[in-house]
Length: 58
Length: 168
Image 1 (tube, rainbow over the protein chains, first blue to last red):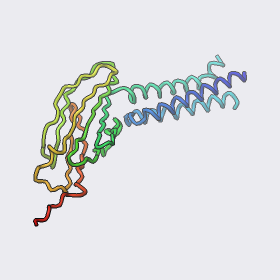
Image 2: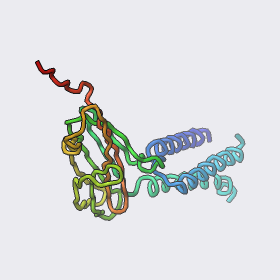
Image 3: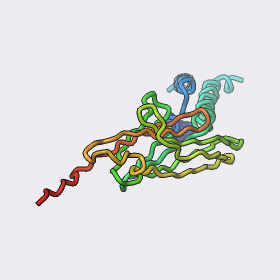
Image 4: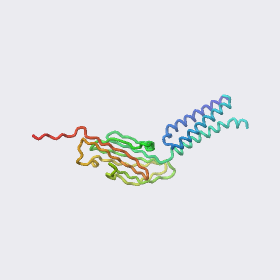
């Protein structure tokens, strides 16, 4: 069970690193609608992750 | 069934992440991007594509009297189809065209870069009667299809204008 959490942790870290890299490289080229949609999806990403951890009892 | 429901937020988070990546690729990476490199003296200045998206997107640079200012215009086609456009370059001053520098068609293949180079000779632009202590400004207008890019060249006055030799 613990190894799963470690793997999830790695997955989350890589996801955040990927978003960070894309944001640093390409956020300046995004349109206003694209920026807004990305922001909403980022909020959704974190809220779903926190809900998942809540269900898992963290 | 219970495990699937438990993992549902994780799958939704993954969907959000994939959505963000899709937006960055389609909206941020794909498209046509142009970069201008202006070399005046020994200093090259690169005007990146994101500069043109700003509201105050007029670049200003200096040039020395009697020297040339070199331009390199790059068009990066990040599309699955080829791109073709007419590129016209001209020099303007006080809303009047001084001269045409270039008029050529540019054709760039899918996910390739196209490039054009030209030079603005300050000697040709300045009227011969201009006193050396006077500065000048010119606008280099780059038209690619409907798009316009403006670069202002500020031609510096000569720091030490030649003094007339006193008559003996």
